[in-house]
Length: 482
Image: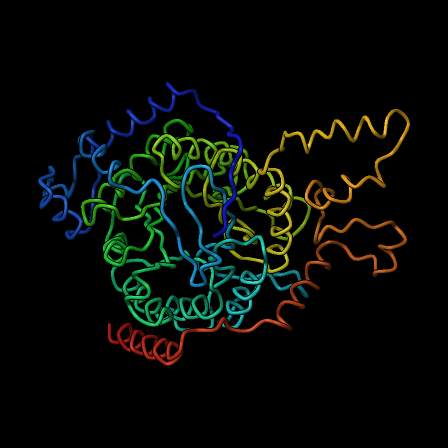
């Protein structure tokens, strides 16, 4: 099982400010409440003896109802990999890094340095790269299966993900149909439903519509709860557009929307694993674009980390870039976001390799992000203070004016005591020139080519390949029939 303890936290809000945001969210859940276009969701709350105004399609929650749901939502659980070595312990204090986003419509072509429409094969290749990179803990997508019919696209994307990684997967599964098909395909790849239920390794986003509305797309939560699969609760009100422009108001609203979905999950099935992951994007008033790498959004994500710790729930957020190329701006925005998220205690940090505000991914940027995650893991491990690490007797033995190169203590400890880069190589100028004087983007591309030359599909259990094909073919027939 993989784990990374965060040794310290960045607290941007005082305890009384966190409490005030929580109280503000509870107030919104009572008045005006959450509206829902889904009758299934409304009836679920009605059957739980919760106030529902069917004329206005609105649910009104009391603080007691919210507190009851927070008590049954697991504070700690394992998000399994299909291979147990990729199991993730999700709880406060753990930090993990994940590849990509959700069905990104383009992919960056390395040769032309321009985005293009991706193919199913592109998605396969990107997933294989994510599988091989050692600091990618969980998998989303760097592109979409853009060469498949629109209504079948998600189904082929599920197939590409499931066949090419044994790490935990999180993806988009809007509504009951697609979420059920995702679960069925995961069961097929697990050797059967019992195998998946005992070790659920696929989860999905639940994304209420801001402001304060749940839709039929959120009915995916019923299938997730039924199979015990993790639900990433991911409202993302945009400051100045679908929430007030101030971060405080955005946090109160986003938190209310997240708490509503957590309550629903626990009514459906108490103990359903949920990951607390509100987004805090802002609308750039100069361009009307949604920000991805801005300091105001990063500030909001750090506050979400605090709220997740306040509720003692595993948390989720992004750390992407608005840059169109894997350049200095992309590296700066991504490092800034990943580091701030990690220091704030976000459990699962998404979007390694995602660029252009989520419109496309880059395999080379993913490789660069893998190195950033490698550096951050070293940062997060903290410093050991012990007799061995202080080495006072070694210092006395060497004495003034000596050196420590030949000391046994140095030989025994330098590999664990120092950081050694993988992609960002330390070379003299002469060594760098002898290797081709490559820019880091070119080094990353060489790594991509090496991985794809050696990689292939991840082995499935006996008989799972044919069963996965059968489930995919039946799903295509079902969606084509309407």
